[in-house]
Amino acid sequence: MPGQGGFPAPAQGLVLTHFLTVRDVAVSRDFYVNVLGGEVILEENPATLKVANSWIIMNPGGGPTPDKPDIVLTPPSPGDPVSTFLNVRVADINAFYAHATAQGVEFLTEPLDRKAEIRCYMRDPDGYLIEVGQATGILQGVFADPPASR
Image (cartoon, rainbow, N blue to C red; front, side, top):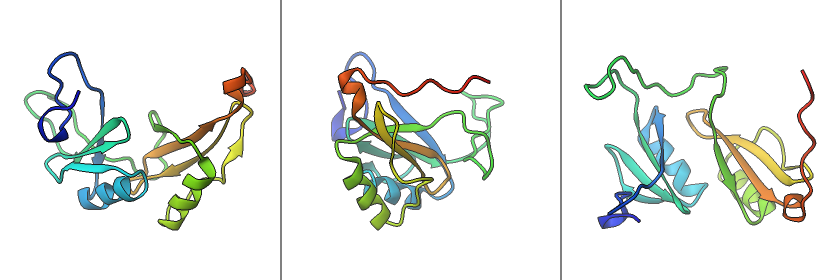
């Protein structure tokens, strides 16, 4: 349950948020507001947005702090391997794709039917990968083909 002003501060239990290290807070904040419909809870330091039923916190990178010694935060560089990404589920992927494309978002591919879902991927201004999908076949017990064996 969010605390005062909508900030993700539960009275009990926990709230899960996703932290993004960004190059330009204003640019990234605008992307998540305009493309994903985020609501700005705190403009900066750290920027905090409510996006659907989740929160995204973003701040510029930086060096170690007393509570995270030896840790340096940096946004991804082009060509970096991907180890995590946001997974966004939408009710109508074609409508979302049209909206995001009109906002200037470039997708890796158009939405593709994977049997269990229709999905595609985009990147945010810092290069973070975002999967966008609409559940289809999985709702009837139809699953995607397993990955090819290596």
